[in-house]
Length: 304
Image (cartoon, rainbow, N blue to C red; front, side, top):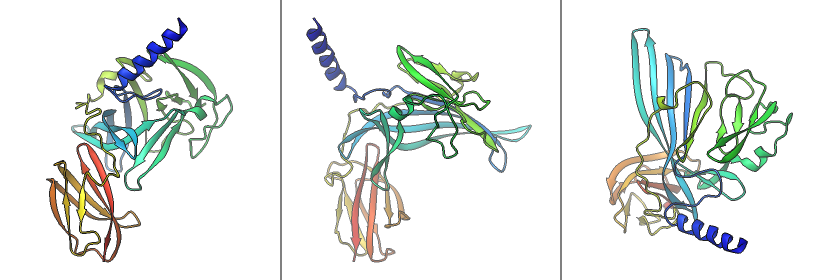
């Protein structure tokens, strides 16, 4: 009976993985972080309501990443009778989860991934241990648990008199831990997953912007280092380079950076066939980045 159960579980994991990227622990395509911040930006008071969410995935250097966006609504209080409201969509970012309980962010410019959270390190914390993720560290004052659906998550509180003042396993830092901000503060008000909601403050979770997802999961999966997606020629080049997409994928932005990561050229477009004037570039080595709806590709190029 036990052997049959294991086989059924494995079959289920395989089948669900065919329709959506399979991750190991905390993340899936439904998660949302609702964050609130309030403070002075040097000109006026600003209240911000943000929703961070995933919309699609992509394959980068052989690893699957969620595409991360943030939808933010800002209320600017210029005076008691003058309030401006702005709505902005920020992105694109990339994040993945591995089987060692780490979150990884992908840095497009450097073509490397960096640890965002090491949850194994966090869940092993004890009372009076130091929050090592803080630049100005403080210690764990208390530990409790919360549930999202049937999943139990450990929560680690500091002694700061603020709510929330904790790190929640798999979710992140919910609010200030060691000190309050001088001109303002922000915190996670709600976390949502699979239709379940955790609320961490008295702010209504329905107050936050609702994202419009396209759900491009497992569609047009590409490797960011695969030069078959975008062709660049000649290379080495002189005053012009030609850029084509053999798969007819529309390029929305071209960025050329030097070896110090400084942007030299930024060109917005909507085309799969581009001729770019590079006469302003000096001789040397550069990196050229191509951004489209479902891909981020880069090449090393040399001007002679």
